[in-house]
Image 1 (cartoon, rainbow, N blue to C red):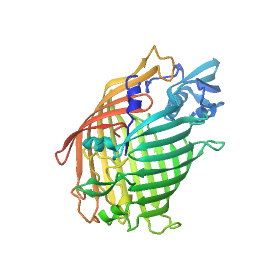
Image 2 (cartoon, rainbow, N blue to C red):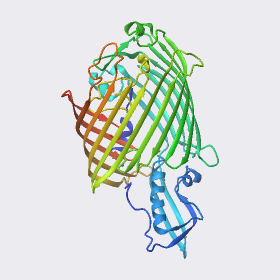
Image 3 (cartoon, rainbow, N blue to C red):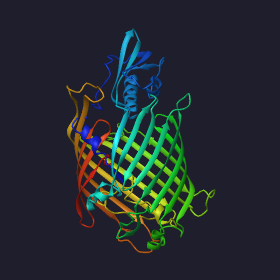
Image 4 (cartoon, rainbow, N blue to C red):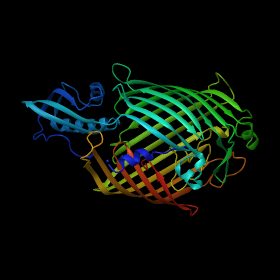
Length: 468
C-alpha cells in the first residue's frame, strides 16, 4: 500500500543546508585545546540532553585542534540524522589561552504534523497508476509529533477511512535510561480491507474484492526495545501479537493462501541490527550502511499452525568519485523457509527489496539476492534559499539540490515450490535507466526514473525515497 506524500512535497519542493559546509571557525595551529563548556542554542523544544548525547566530545575533553574539527563534523552529522533539525552549526570559540566554548546552534523543525491521508489500496504508487482506480482511494488524518515532550519521542495517530479502514497508535521513546542508550516503543491497531491479493499470475498480484464485506481483517500489537550503545550501532527487538481473519472465498481461490484456515492468531519475534555511517540518512553521498534482520513468525505459544522464519542482510556504500560525481551500490540477500503460506510471503517487489525496472512485479521465493548501483552527477549543488515573507525560521530557510543518475540493478529469486510456475522466478533479472532526484529539507526526496528491464519493458516511475 502506497502512502502519498504529495502534500508534504508540494510544501517543500518550492521551498529546501549545505551538508558539507564547514561550520567551525578555523583553528590556526594544531594546538592542545580544552573544552571548557558546551552551550546549545536555538533548541526551544528539544532538551539539551538530547543534543549533548549526539556529541562525540564532552566538557573537560583535551584535544588537538585537528581532532576537535573531526569530532565537530561527525557530531554535526549525528545531530542532522536525528531528523529534529533543519540546520546545525557547531562553532568553537577560544576564550582563555587554550580553553574553548563550543556553541551548538540549531534550527528546529516543525514537529507536529496533522497530515491529511491520501493512500491507494495498492502495493505502491506505480502499481496504482497502472489502473488509476479512484475507488481504491483512502482518506483520513495522520497526526504526528516527531519530538514529543522535547525528548525525541515519536507519537503517531492514524485515523483512516475510505476504501480501507485503519486505526493505529504508535509511541516511541528512544531514550529512557540515564545513559540514553535504551528505548522502548508501543504500536497497535486494526486494518480492514475490502480487497486483498490472493495469488500471483505471471508475477503480478491477483486481487479479490468484495465491496460489501471486509475480506481481510488484521489486528496487531507490538512491544519494542532499542539499544544504542554507540552513535552508529542500533539493536532493535520486537515482540508482536498478530491476528488475521480472511474471507472464505480467498481460501477457495487459492488453497495455498493459508493452511486451510480463515483465522490465524500468533506471536512473532524479530531482531534487527543497524550500523549506520551515512553522512545524511535521507539522501547519502558518503559513508556506508549495514543492516541484519531475523524474523520468526509463530512461537508455538498461542498457535502451532504458523511456523516460519526469514533472515536478511543489506549493505550500502556511498563514494565520491570526482567533484560532483558520486557512486553508490547496494547488496541485499534474504532467505526464508519454503513452507510459508501465501499471505506471509514477501520477496522482490516489497520494501526494501525493490528492483528498478520491475516495480509492477512481485517475485516471491525462499531465497533472493539483489545488487543495485547508481552513478550520480550533481546538477545543482546544495543551495540555501530564504523566503522573506515567511516569518517562521522552521520554513523560511531551506535547501535544495538536484541530481541525475544512471543505474543498473540485477536480482535473482529462487522458488522451486510454486504450484504454478512464475516466469520471473529462477532466472537472472536486470534493469537499467536514468533518474532525476530532487532533494530538499524535511527529508523530502522526489524521484523520477525511466527504466528498461530484461523483458524489454520501458516505463516512467515516481518514488519518494533515495534510490539506494
